Image 1 (tube, one colour):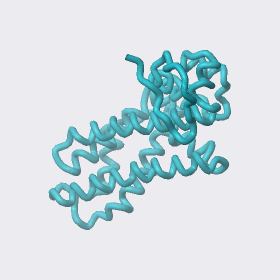
Image 2: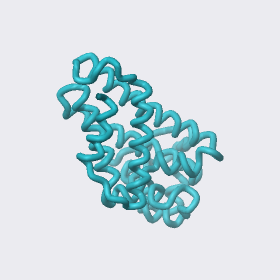
Image 3: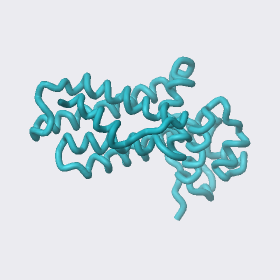
Length: 206
Protein backbone atom coordinates (compact mmCIF):
# COMPACT_ATOMS: atom_id res chain seq x y z
CA UNK A 1 0.00 0.00 0.00
CA UNK A 2 1.36 3.40 -0.89
CA UNK A 3 1.96 5.83 1.95
CA UNK A 4 -0.18 8.94 1.94
CA UNK A 5 1.40 12.34 2.45
CA UNK A 6 1.37 13.87 5.88
CA UNK A 7 -0.59 17.07 6.08
CA UNK A 8 1.40 20.13 7.21
CA UNK A 9 0.83 23.81 7.73
CA UNK A 10 3.17 24.58 4.87
CA UNK A 11 1.70 22.21 2.27
CA UNK A 12 -2.02 21.51 2.64
CA UNK A 13 -3.31 18.93 0.19
CA UNK A 14 -6.70 19.54 -1.44
CA UNK A 15 -9.18 16.65 -1.47
CA UNK A 16 -9.07 14.36 -4.48
CA UNK A 17 -7.74 11.01 -5.63
CA UNK A 18 -5.08 9.30 -3.50
CA UNK A 19 -1.53 9.92 -4.63
CA UNK A 20 0.05 7.21 -6.73
CA UNK A 21 3.56 7.53 -5.31
CA UNK A 22 5.37 6.86 -2.06
CA UNK A 23 5.82 10.18 -0.30
CA UNK A 24 8.79 9.12 1.81
CA UNK A 25 10.67 7.80 -1.24
CA UNK A 26 9.98 11.04 -3.11
CA UNK A 27 11.16 13.14 -0.17
CA UNK A 28 14.32 11.06 0.16
CA UNK A 29 15.11 12.04 -3.43
CA UNK A 30 14.44 15.69 -2.62
CA UNK A 31 16.73 15.45 0.41
CA UNK A 32 19.60 14.19 -1.72
CA UNK A 33 19.46 17.04 -4.22
CA UNK A 34 18.82 19.74 -1.60
CA UNK A 35 21.76 18.49 0.47
CA UNK A 36 24.06 18.41 -2.54
CA UNK A 37 23.06 21.69 -4.17
CA UNK A 38 21.30 23.75 -1.52
CA UNK A 39 17.88 25.34 -1.77
CA UNK A 40 18.46 28.17 -4.23
CA UNK A 41 20.70 26.23 -6.61
CA UNK A 42 18.20 23.37 -6.99
CA UNK A 43 15.96 23.88 -10.01
CA UNK A 44 12.45 22.50 -10.29
CA UNK A 45 13.69 20.20 -13.04
CA UNK A 46 16.43 18.80 -10.82
CA UNK A 47 13.97 18.43 -7.97
CA UNK A 48 11.34 16.56 -9.98
CA UNK A 49 14.04 14.30 -11.45
CA UNK A 50 15.37 13.50 -7.98
CA UNK A 51 11.86 12.81 -6.69
CA UNK A 52 11.04 10.81 -9.85
CA UNK A 53 7.83 12.74 -10.29
CA UNK A 54 6.30 14.88 -12.98
CA UNK A 55 6.16 18.58 -12.26
CA UNK A 56 2.37 18.42 -12.05
CA UNK A 57 2.52 15.70 -9.40
CA UNK A 58 4.89 17.78 -7.28
CA UNK A 59 2.62 20.81 -7.42
CA UNK A 60 -0.42 18.70 -6.60
CA UNK A 61 1.32 17.43 -3.48
CA UNK A 62 3.04 20.69 -2.46
CA UNK A 63 2.22 24.33 -2.86
CA UNK A 64 5.67 25.30 -4.12
CA UNK A 65 9.39 24.50 -3.93
CA UNK A 66 9.61 25.96 -0.43
CA UNK A 67 6.93 23.55 0.78
CA UNK A 68 8.90 20.64 -0.69
CA UNK A 69 11.98 21.87 1.15
CA UNK A 70 10.13 22.09 4.45
CA UNK A 71 8.82 18.55 4.05
CA UNK A 72 12.27 17.29 3.07
CA UNK A 73 13.79 19.00 6.10
CA UNK A 74 11.28 17.35 8.43
CA UNK A 75 11.82 13.95 6.81
CA UNK A 76 15.59 14.32 7.16
CA UNK A 77 15.29 15.34 10.81
CA UNK A 78 13.07 12.34 11.53
CA UNK A 79 15.37 9.83 9.87
CA UNK A 80 18.55 11.22 11.42
CA UNK A 81 16.86 11.35 14.82
CA UNK A 82 16.01 7.67 14.54
CA UNK A 83 19.59 6.85 13.53
CA UNK A 84 21.01 8.82 16.44
CA UNK A 85 18.70 7.20 18.98
CA UNK A 86 19.55 3.77 17.59
CA UNK A 87 23.27 4.51 17.96
CA UNK A 88 22.79 5.66 21.55
CA UNK A 89 20.72 2.59 22.41
CA UNK A 90 23.72 0.34 21.76
CA UNK A 91 25.53 1.80 24.78
CA UNK A 92 25.35 0.27 28.24
CA UNK A 93 25.53 3.59 30.11
CA UNK A 94 25.35 7.31 29.46
CA UNK A 95 29.01 7.62 28.55
CA UNK A 96 28.92 4.77 26.06
CA UNK A 97 25.70 6.08 24.56
CA UNK A 98 27.21 9.50 24.01
CA UNK A 99 30.35 8.01 22.48
CA UNK A 100 28.20 5.99 20.07
CA UNK A 101 26.34 9.14 19.07
CA UNK A 102 29.61 10.92 18.32
CA UNK A 103 30.86 7.94 16.31
CA UNK A 104 27.59 8.01 14.36
CA UNK A 105 28.08 11.67 13.49
CA UNK A 106 31.60 11.00 12.23
CA UNK A 107 30.40 7.99 10.22
CA UNK A 108 27.63 9.99 8.54
CA UNK A 109 30.10 12.77 7.74
CA UNK A 110 32.22 10.46 5.58
CA UNK A 111 31.93 8.93 2.13
CA UNK A 112 29.09 9.71 -0.24
CA UNK A 113 26.77 10.83 2.55
CA UNK A 114 29.42 13.15 3.94
CA UNK A 115 30.05 14.67 0.50
CA UNK A 116 26.32 15.11 -0.01
CA UNK A 117 26.05 17.18 3.16
CA UNK A 118 23.50 17.86 5.86
CA UNK A 119 20.27 19.72 5.15
CA UNK A 120 20.25 21.23 8.66
CA UNK A 121 23.74 22.69 8.30
CA UNK A 122 22.98 23.78 4.75
CA UNK A 123 19.80 25.52 5.86
CA UNK A 124 21.59 27.27 8.71
CA UNK A 125 24.19 28.69 6.33
CA UNK A 126 22.02 29.45 3.31
CA UNK A 127 18.59 30.32 4.67
CA UNK A 128 18.51 31.15 8.37
CA UNK A 129 19.46 34.81 7.86
CA UNK A 130 16.79 35.43 5.21
CA UNK A 131 14.02 32.89 5.83
CA UNK A 132 12.35 33.17 9.26
CA UNK A 133 10.47 29.90 8.79
CA UNK A 134 13.65 27.97 8.15
CA UNK A 135 15.50 29.83 10.90
CA UNK A 136 12.87 28.60 13.36
CA UNK A 137 13.09 25.03 12.03
CA UNK A 138 16.89 24.97 12.18
CA UNK A 139 16.96 26.48 15.67
CA UNK A 140 14.41 23.95 16.93
CA UNK A 141 16.29 21.02 15.42
CA UNK A 142 19.65 22.07 16.83
CA UNK A 143 18.05 22.55 20.24
CA UNK A 144 16.47 19.09 20.02
CA UNK A 145 19.88 17.58 19.23
CA UNK A 146 21.52 19.56 22.02
CA UNK A 147 18.92 18.48 24.56
CA UNK A 148 19.41 14.85 23.56
CA UNK A 149 23.15 15.09 24.16
CA UNK A 150 22.64 16.91 27.47
CA UNK A 151 20.25 14.16 28.51
CA UNK A 152 22.88 11.51 27.81
CA UNK A 153 25.42 13.44 29.88
CA UNK A 154 22.97 13.60 32.79
CA UNK A 155 22.22 9.91 32.36
CA UNK A 156 25.95 9.22 32.59
CA UNK A 157 26.21 11.33 35.71
CA UNK A 158 23.33 9.41 37.27
CA UNK A 159 24.88 6.01 36.47
CA UNK A 160 28.40 7.09 37.47
CA UNK A 161 30.02 6.89 34.01
CA UNK A 162 30.40 10.69 33.68
CA UNK A 163 31.74 12.91 36.51
CA UNK A 164 29.25 15.14 38.30
CA UNK A 165 31.37 18.26 37.73
CA UNK A 166 30.78 18.18 33.96
CA UNK A 167 28.41 21.00 32.96
CA UNK A 168 25.79 19.11 30.96
CA UNK A 169 24.25 22.04 29.06
CA UNK A 170 27.51 23.81 28.19
CA UNK A 171 29.19 20.58 27.14
CA UNK A 172 26.20 19.63 25.01
CA UNK A 173 26.34 23.02 23.27
CA UNK A 174 30.04 22.54 22.50
CA UNK A 175 29.40 19.02 21.21
CA UNK A 176 26.69 20.35 18.89
CA UNK A 177 29.23 22.82 17.51
CA UNK A 178 31.59 19.90 16.93
CA UNK A 179 29.06 17.58 15.33
CA UNK A 180 27.76 20.22 12.95
CA UNK A 181 31.34 21.11 12.11
CA UNK A 182 31.94 17.47 11.22
CA UNK A 183 29.25 17.74 8.53
CA UNK A 184 30.99 20.79 7.07
CA UNK A 185 34.36 19.03 7.05
CA UNK A 186 32.78 15.95 5.45
CA UNK A 187 31.22 18.09 2.74
CA UNK A 188 34.65 19.29 1.62
CA UNK A 189 36.03 15.73 1.83
CA UNK A 190 38.67 16.17 4.50
CA UNK A 191 39.64 12.82 6.08
CA UNK A 192 37.96 11.89 9.37
CA UNK A 193 39.13 9.22 11.80
CA UNK A 194 36.12 8.01 13.79
CA UNK A 195 37.91 6.58 16.80
CA UNK A 196 40.44 9.40 17.19
CA UNK A 197 37.90 12.21 16.84
CA UNK A 198 35.41 10.58 19.18
CA UNK A 199 38.20 9.99 21.69
CA UNK A 200 39.22 13.65 21.64
CA UNK A 201 35.58 14.76 22.05
CA UNK A 202 35.08 12.41 24.97
CA UNK A 203 37.88 14.20 26.86
CA UNK A 204 35.31 16.93 27.48
CA UNK A 205 33.75 14.50 29.95
CA UNK A 206 36.93 13.94 31.99
